[in-house]
Structures are given as structure tokens and as C-alpha cells.
Image 1 (tube, rainbow, N blue to C red):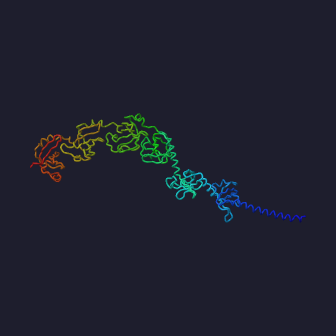
Image 2: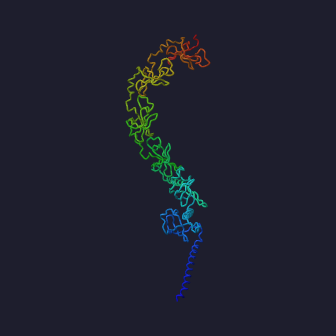
Image 3: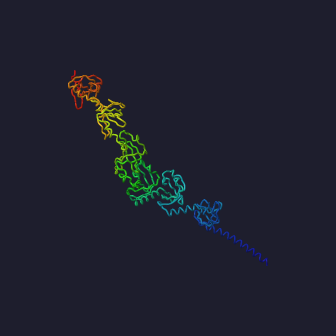
Length: 539
């Protein structure tokens, strides 16, 4: 009975073995059947079945699994078993019989399709600046887009590196479908944003509003402030109620500042800004704070050739004119008496509120010495002094410290014509003179040298009668005639018309100083005190 069962058992085992082989063969066929419709370059979905230190194993429903590098995942730490992963089928079977797949390439294809299906040229897209390349930057927007350096929105090529790694918005400039590349612009996006902000700001802006902004640029005349897409001008005169020489004394590029809208022109997109207007105008009640003739203290903040500016308080300055420095001292340079930051006491002389001007006096702090000078230097009294300086019209003589008098050239000689004071005196000479007049109001003293001696004219008229012929000596030769010295300090003039032989050339070629000449008195002028002479018919 056992023998009858053995053949049957062997036959059954053989049949079972054949069925198993058939099943294995059929499984390969199934795999082949499932992949025969998939072309290389298509995207398929797989399931993560294993994760190693360097790779991710993906079941793609084929006889061999797909192997992906961990580098293909942006964050490998979040990958889990059974995760679904889309991959690109690059090769169904390479030389080693392995299927080749790529997640990164699948992502690029998916991202490209997403971008071209959802964005057009001119649209705004967000991306991370990935790295610098020749001519610009690459931006990750799901795929690598090119950002030309000229469209990066930076001021210099050196600043390109400063935006690497930043998540920013860009405007799509060009989509090249055949080459599958995209060009983006940060500059165009920023300009669009600024334009929108500018229009919004212009629609909302009102005079008197407070606006926050950033100092964008500084010039000699003011600062340009970015109000958020719209630039406004903060003029130097609207920065402070006080004096500033340059806007950089108050502001620097990049400073955050709050300003007042003073005026605006929506058509030309111009805005005038103010900083000082945030505080009260200190000139509002200046006349009450600083009455005329009141004594006040201030700090020297500026020296100019015509005086000194004194800060009485922040925003209010007055001027001490150089003529108001001293009653008696001749001040030619304010720095002789004052220095920057000096604190001085002054008298308020005048206030011009409309033009924001205050006239101050330094000398008025002391008594006016000229009130006593008129009593000290009486008319007709003799004085002595030192010649301090000469002018074309006379010599200034110092009578005492700070007190000078003028000897006019007409008061240097009774009879002699003086063309310049240096013909009589020199700088540094000690001279004697007579007080002719004292004007305490204008601080002027007139002196005379000829008044030290009696007027010789009455005797001259008797001595040099008309018709008298006398010998003289040439003292000066002018183009209109020749001056002749009749005796020391007494001269007469031979007019060119009274010369015996009228020369054809210059008089200086014929007559020399010191030449002796015979002349005749033809005129005596009492008013001008002049003696007219003639050289005709005197032999």
C-alpha cells in the first residue's frame, strides 16, 4: 500500500515545484508589465522602506528598489519609513541591473510645471538668494532662477554678497520655456513697491502730519528723507530754530527721523519737510523775553568779519556788530576781543521779530567815555599824540588809549598845498596839534597843525601885492602848471597858460624841482588862499 502511494506523492511534489516556478516567473512578468508603459524620464511615486546613514531606499513597485542619496532631501531628519516620495525614473536598468531614480530631478520638474502653470512674466514670486555666479546671483524659487547683478537692487557689486541667504520677493522678467530657465529682478520689485507706497502716501498725506522716515542723502542745503517710497526734502533752514552750518551737524545717512509735512505737490511728487516745527517757535514771544535795553547773557557761537553771533537760547541768536564792541578801541577783528564758546553779558539794542534779528551791544555794558571826552578836550586846546596811521585825506593821532583825532590834510598847512599827509608827518611821529572840534555822538575829534601858528595870510597879501616880480624856486611840476616856492611854506602856481614859452611836450621835461625862476604875482585869492603867478614878461 505504501508502494502505491509513493509515486503519487512524487508526482504531486513535482507538480507543486513547477507551480512555484511558474509563480516566480509570473511575478517578474507582472513587474515587467507594470513598468513597460513607464518611459525613462517619467515621474513615479515610491515608498520609503529603509533609511541608512547616507541613503534612502524607496520601493517603487519594481523588482529592485530605488536608492536615493540623503543629499537629495532638504531636511533628511524628517524622513520616515512609509513616507511617499516622487522620483524621476532615469534608467530602468543600468549595466549593474539597477534601476536609477532621482528625487531632486523630480522636484525640479514638478516645481517647473508648478511655476509655469501658476506664474507669468511680470508676476511676483518669492525665493531665497542661493549663491553668487558670474554676472549675478542664483535664486531658489523651487528651481534655480537667474538674478542679473544689474537687477539685484544693490548700489555696488560688492553688496551682492550681502543678500545671499535672504528670502526676498522678485519680479519675473522672462520665462524661457525651451531652455527651462527664468530671469528675475529684485530692482523692479522694489521700484514697484515704492511706486505703490508713493501713491498711497500721496493719497493720505496732509500738511502738519508727523511722518517717520530715514535719512537717504545729505547735501549742503538739506537732507532727503525716505518716507517709505517717497522722498521729501528737509531744508537746512527747517532743521533747527538755531544756527547750523551744515545738515551733517544734526543728521547722518541712515538716521531714523520723525518730521513734519510742511507742504507737498502731488503732481510733481515733491514734499517739503520740517524738523524744527515739532517744537514751539522760540521767536514767538522774543520781545517779552528780551526787552530792548535789557541786560542778558549769551554764548559766542560764531565769529565773522563784521561781528559776533551770540546764542541767547536754543534757536535765538543776536549779533554784536563790530562797531558795538568798544567805545574807544578801534576793533578790526572780533577775535581780538571774543572767542567761540565765551559767555558774555550784552545789552539788547534792537529786535526785528519778523526777520528774526536781534542787535546786541557789548560796549553798552560800560559807561561811554566819550561823555567825558568833550569836557576833557576843549576846542582850541593844545594836545600831543602819536601818529597811528595815515590815509589819503589825513593822519590819525592817538591822544590816549583808544582815543584818536584826525588831522585833515587841509589843516596841516596855512599856505602849502598838501597832496598826502606823508609830505608832513610819518607813522609813529609824535606831533602837537590843536583841538578844532569834538563830536561825542559820532566819536570824532578834529585836530589841526596849522592852527599852532597864526594865520599868515594877512601878511602875505601885503608882502606879495599884485604886479610884484620876485625870484622863486620850482617846488612841484604838475600837468596843469608849476608850483613855485616864494619862501618856506609859501607857494604860488604858474598855470600852464601863464608860462612864457608853452612847451610842446610834458612840463616835467622842461621844468625840474629846484630850478630857479622869476615870476610875477598876478592874483591873490582870499577864499582859496592861493597866489597866482605868471612867467610871462618878467625880464
